[in-house]
Image 1 (cartoon, rainbow, N blue to C red):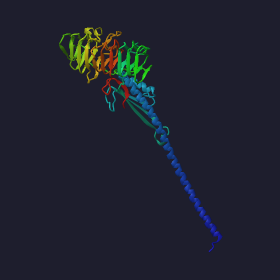
Image 2: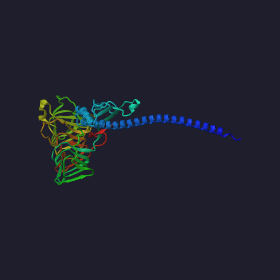
Image 3: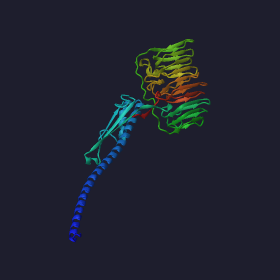
Image 4: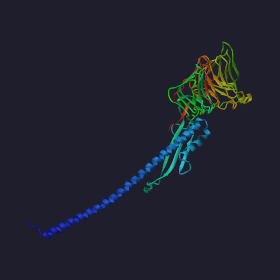
Length: 440
């Protein structure tokens, strides 16, 4: 059966009409869906941009917090605890974060109020916080975000060097002289003097070390310098690795022993810890045995013209005499002559653990030079660190070997007269020589 042409046309038009309307409705729905999707995509892009910006701000703030913590720790290492806060704040400001400005808050704590080192005064915590406005996320109702970073630094990690000369300008700050004079350093040597001859190795003397860092110059034209690692001059001076140590408190008016002199031949005199007003003197006939503990020498120092001294777990503090006894005028150096014999090891506990000799940084008359001499002629062994922050030290005696199982930190260090001196260094957490490091 053939349908009339007109009916076929009507049916055809009716079909096309319904299809166009359906497509129009679908296009409208798609446009709405695309519009909603674009809003979502733009929102995600806005959040992503803001998150990226916040991450950048956080990195910058972390740099400022770390720098502030390191600056504060530098003051701790120098023993200037009253400057920790100011130095930390100055360094965060230098890195673009000033407390009280642009929504920034910087908090400094010595020691930290959180983390592993709570309350430890050898560490400083710096927290940097800033309220950062949103760039695009405010379109979604997120107007700002808080960036908070934290840095903790302290006098913590052991130093890789074990000889430090702290004088800032002396010639021959590290000096080895003599054809058989030799200084063997089992670790690194650091010389802070700016002098062109800060290190002087002459008259066929020998310096052997694993590294050598000198602020000034090195003159080894008359001797031998053997460096297994790095050797550099013109480097920045290094902070005192023992600057954090504090002079122990004690009764300034007390004397436990006065004018102690050991000179009886064939008799071993036993000494006990305490305050020795007038110091300790041992003559060529004397033999002293020291019981463990802290020996405070108040004027007179330690003088050995011969004789013998032995002691385990002992530490010497050399400081001024009592005011009533003459004060700084009666300060005496450490003087162990070439005819003396010594075997001493430092205390391993307490605030001066592993320090054998501690020179009070404030001791002596300003401007006077006190040349400390540790020149035992019988292959002496000293276990612990020799610390003379403002005074020079001469090590060794002709024809003998002096061994320091520890470190030497002094204004200047010299080895002369055919001496051989071995400084082994210290390692591990027990080393008293510390460098500044970030710990959290």
